[in-house]
Amino acid sequence: MDYETPLFFHVMQYADAADRDVIDMVSGNPDWEPPEALRNGLREYADLEPDRFQYAPSEGLRELREEIAARRGVDAEQVVVTNGAGEANYLSMARALERDSGDEILLTDPVYPYYPGKTTMLGGIQRFVATDDEGYLDPAAVRAAASDETAAIVVNTPNNPTGAVYPAETMHELVAVAEEYDAILISDEVYDHYGLSGAFASALETDSAHRIVTNAFSKSMAITGFRVGYAIFPPELVADAKSRHMLVNVATTRPGQYAVLQALRETGPEYYERNRKRLRGRVETFTDALEAAGAEYTTPSGSFYVMARFEGYPGTLANVERLIDEAGVAGMPGEAFGDARSEWLRFALVTPRVEEAAERLAAYFD
Ligand SMILES: Cc1ncc(COP(=O)(O)O)c(C=O)c1O
Image (tube, rainbow, N blue to C red; front, side):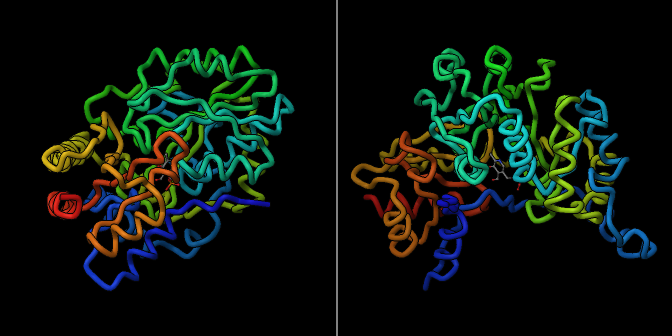
């Protein structure tokens, strides 16, 4: 079976092995501090009794599930704490396919590459709906692509790689399409704290037995290495998701859950606003330099990413490797995100060196 292994780790390894200084704009690993309370929680954890070093409840620490549930306005029973948003998406897609209401998973083009990979791995059939040039999804196009074969519609807002932040009306309509076709809308909201100019709207705003919301603290708390995320299921879908989570993982990290809970309780909104402000500054610096270099580029309304297009330099893996070797800047090939952006490169603004990176790109393409 072709598991369509995403290219991220390959490009990161290539950049690491390069024989020169390379500015890493490949991965979505924030380079800023986690909340202070998270560090304190971890320190505290080291001194707890040995019983806290044993299995956490499989579905997640009760206090963490309750804290998430209270913040998201759902019942704690609906919350499963997962190994990041990655596992939350996997559980959700598996659950949608198990319902015997179709084999097709509707995805967007451009797409976050782990979704097609997971679809194939789970035995589903991929079907793509094109977004517009800015990355926005027309629910009418999703409705036109939907059928009795549709098991799930998977979307991501704020979006990786386009930076689109879907309006509340879109989210509402997407839930309606899922209901019409007895499918599940899976809304991956892992960048929810990074609405930069667009107002983020969660699929949770539309109550329905046909939507699952996935999320994680990986990006919002700058802890992609911790592996603490969650999925919110409709009551009738949650029990089997918990079983699958238990069979695959037993449980997820207990110290990580403890520290995240501490950070959720003690971190004020200024922490998140500071991170957004930093990103807005980087977007401006990077896009100004791309403008001066005569490149085409996107200006994200949310998430961490800018896509750029350089004349005569398509977004292939070979070109990304050449850019690492010859310009010292590592990005992701646009072709990794589907057909629609194969001419483009994606740059993650999670380095303080965005200005230098843009100057290197400008000099290289001069
Ligand atoms: C859209 C999207 N979903 C999920 C993930 C994975 O999140 P996690 O690290 O919490 O598994 C990423 C990571 O970059 C992402 O961009």
